[in-house]
Amino acid sequence: MATAKAQASKTNRIEKSDSVNNNNWIKKDTMKDRFFTWKQFADGFGKEMVSASEVYERRKKDGIKDYAFATYDFVFISDSKDKLDSLGNFLAVNYGYKINETKKEDEYWELAGDATEFPVDEDNLRYWALDLYAKGYEFDCKLDGYGAMADPKNQNFPDLNITLYDHYFELAMDAYNKRNFGLAVINFSTAIKIKPGDPNSWYSRAIAKDELHTWKAARRDYDKAIELAPDFTDAIVNRAANKDEAGEYDEAIKDYDRAIELEPQNAMAYFNRGNSKFNKKDKKGACEDWIKAKELGADYAQKRIDNECN
Image (tube, rainbow, N blue to C red; front, side, top):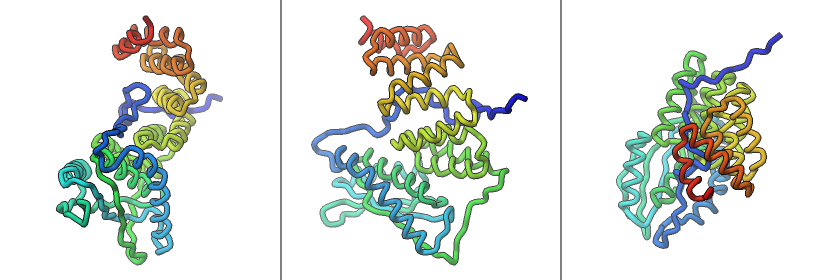
């Protein structure tokens, strides 16, 4: 008897159409006059995840259950009022955060505000914090702390009725399109709690996690999406890109091979497979794939052909 397979709708998920190495929203900036340097950002990334776990554990000890709503306040610091004002404006317009007036505190300028409420568990708090940490770097400001009041006698939780699946999915899509990747992860996670068998939520959450440079967690979500929908070509291509970025070129090529088997006209799969082959020093194979990608309409392949195939 044939086994039914979950299918991945193309009308209700993130469409990631860029090529491999797409995680460029956090750009390495080595300007000497930066307040928050790339080295400080990179060195602190793991520490920020640990800090979020510590904040979560304190919340748990206070008797707050997982997925209870909380509204976190936060503080950023920088050497420039203009930088903080720009960050504050972005967070107000795109995230809907309440932003206070930037003030001078000792040697630094300081910006404080309040986030919108979200259901908190360890993962949700971690991704919320990582997103703020990364946004701070983008505006040359440093996330200096955050916290929330905890009242175990007054806990509210999101409604996880099956009829609200589309609601949370659309909230996640809206957050992603506004570059609020932390809230996107949170809302996709809520959608997954409601309907864990839909591969689109796992796939879309993987993309949001990739944007926040948590590639191992993103890989697990791609794996789950493909487990639920084995012929989910976009998920296979994105997982391959994830593997390429991790230096797993042979495994990436296997995924690209599978994607091309499923969709022989998939220009991105050819282009990205060419990149992986080039990373393996297979220049001939890379050029063949880039030329094929160009024939299939991937005009962006021409630059690689011009630079590497003459």
